[in-house]
Length: 211
Image (cartoon, rainbow, N blue to C red):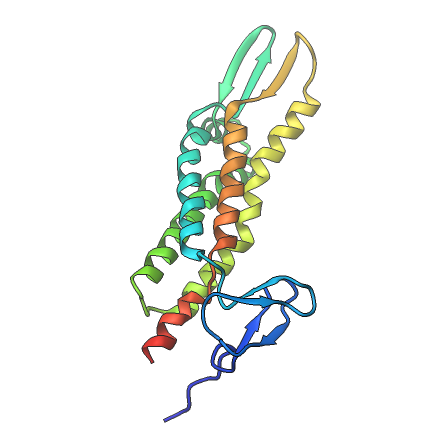
């Protein structure tokens, strides 16, 4: 029977979250263990209140996601006629105009990615709280993907910002950012904070404790 792999916790080491220095401690458990001798950051075996903080950011993001998709993202005025477009109506407009590539980018970055990120984070949090041992490596990969692609959800906000700056033709045509832009930006930031608050090492803690 092969020996269990040596972990930092079993070796009495704590990794600094800021400079990643491994610091030896006499109490390699949970909680506060002084400060890093190199950068001075507080040392923790795991991120404090990781699950609670991740849930808080995630639930707030879910609430903000509703007005981000219901309220108009842009308000276009052309020759005195005003038109409001949500994210989805903008996707439909580009599809009807033949711009499938732009529609696909907006749909993936502004609708699919935020929903997938919310679903994955909920799945990771629930699996950890239920002490699930199912495929910890794959769940860790899911977390890395979520952390990586989260920032690209701001593409829609960037597009709106560029349009607002470029289309300023007075009474002829004018584009203004709608209230959904603020809510959508808040959703992106909150999901990034939720992913940052979640400590993926707790996925493996259950397996280590049970063994």
